[in-house]
Image (cartoon, rainbow, N blue to C red; front, side, top):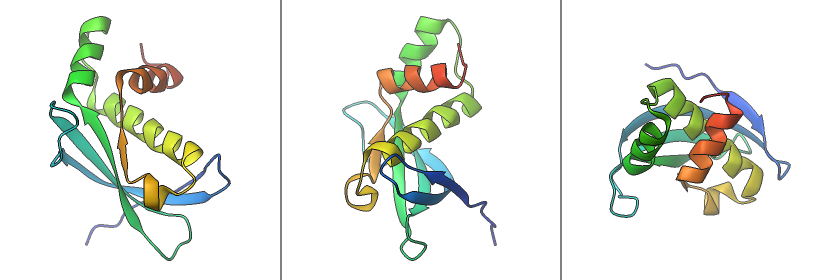
Length: 120
């Protein structure tokens, strides 16, 4: 039995979310025409209903960042950017269960997240 560490985040819409990281896998649904990695989080805002949120990190976006910065992103840096995208969803989407179940990290949000995290 896997014990998950439940974390808490207060979103910009006033909801307090609890979430934990489930895992990552090659995306079953493509993002555009490029393959991606899907990071899955289980989320609740009411402690009653838990739902999955998939955050997709397209391979193309990672490759573009690697080329423009002259090095490869580490797994930890990729996870950090994905988690920042999840938090952005918590801040901006009022109905996460209805409208925030599929989030995508694009080039702009990747750069912004990594800058926030101090990654160069």
